[in-house]
Amino acid sequence: MYAADIHFHLLPGVDDGPSDIGESLELARAAVAADTGAVVVTPHVRGDFVTDPLELPGRVAELRAALAEERIPLELHCGGELGHDLVGVLAQPELEAIAQGPAGGRWLLVETPFEGFTDRFHEATGELRDRGFGVVIAHPERTADAATEGADALRRELALGSVAQVNAQSLTGRHGEDALHAGHALVQAGLIALVGSDAHGPVRPPSLRPAFAALMRGGADPRIASRLVRVRPWQLLARGLPQHAAAAA
Image 1 (tube, rainbow, N blue to C red):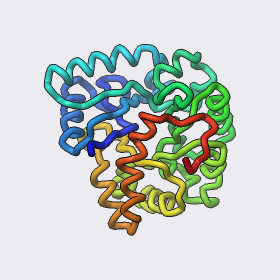
Image 2 (spheres, one colour):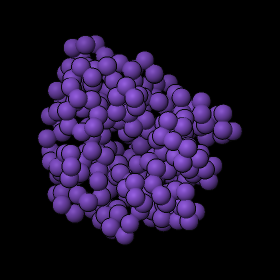
Image 3 (cartoon, rainbow, N blue to C red):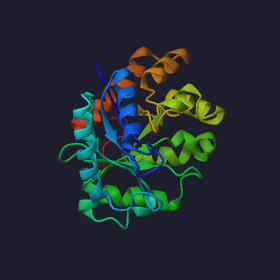
Image 4 (cartoon, rainbow, N blue to C red):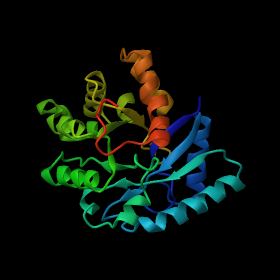
């Protein structure tokens, strides 16, 4: 079964991912070599990178054509890693341009601030739910809240219907000891719904397969590890995430 990766910085020259098309193609080849068949292309949509999501479908189409020319069999979905500060600024068509899932289950990947969850973050995710989108929270293990106060702020989001995505390189230790321990602890606590690579390039390559191995070494039930890495990403793409879905869905 080929993997789907819902968090992947593949577009050239738009954020801190690949700088040019050559680097994008190499990263795509690495994904295919790691048995990944589909990725959601998720450039940073925030004030310091992409601020106009409507430009992204065209860029993804250009990259899709380049992959076809190079015969790289990787399915691309146009998405974004949304900064909560832009939620109140973007119009509905702009959010739709980077949303995934079928009608009634559209969802957005929202970046967790490294400094921790704030009231503004919760307000932004609440607005997204009010506007009809489910929320997938990107890499909560890399924020201060993951290691303190029992991840109360994350639990608050999950209780409201959000689901959480842990970074593969957190589970393998390449994001540092804090993220390593927090990532595995959140998995063990049942707070994580799926794994994403958050791939950026050679130093942050596609890592779903190493993440699965790391989960197994950490004592995870094989069925849970498979669900996190292999099953749930495909389910999110095919079935979506209703904005008020239960966190355990």
